[in-house]
Image (cartoon, rainbow, N blue to C red):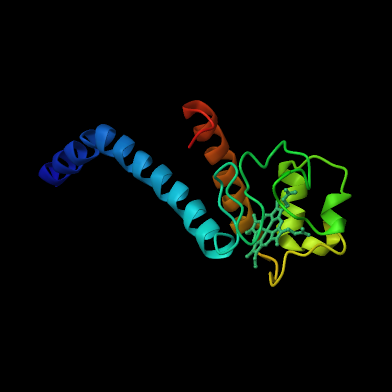
Amino acid sequence: MEDRMRSSHSWLGLPLTTASVLLAIAATAQDDAGQLMFNNACRTCHVVKEGDNRLGPNLYRIIGRLAGSVGSYDYSSALDNADFVWDEETLDRFIADPDQVVPGNNMKPFAGISSKEERAKIIAFLRREAANRKAVGSTL
Ligand code: HEC
């Protein structure tokens, strides 16, 4: 019995470093989850690189950007005439149901993402991407 206690103790004592490694892995896994969800749900039509428009406009630093403001992209008049700045809340509502935020938009075919958790992860990915790209400069 005593032996077992001791060994379980040492097992518990050792992992401080193990725990932080696991935390780091968990954080990375979360990042990856957001990126993966972005790739699955958005990347067919959007990239986050400045100036790189695909079927949809680039989403470079989209949080804090004026809606419909990429000059090199040909928006629907609905988005062209939109007069608000994207924040996390409007983004969340937009990717849940685009027509609710910008009626008449042309983001199609896109069914909307019903999972709040999935939307939050995608938005966290966009926020992180923006921070990274700001840190290394806008030429990436
Ligand atoms: C099928 C292609 C497609 C998919 C998939 C798609 N989008 Fe879009 N998106 C578009 C198009 C096209 C527009 C421009 C719509 C317009 O002009 O009305 C747009 C516009 C936007 C805008 C407005 C940008 C601005 O400059 O105001 C945001 C934000 C956006 N999309 C985010 C997303 C996110 C996040 C996802 C993934 C969850 C996504 N989109 C998935 C095609 C798509």
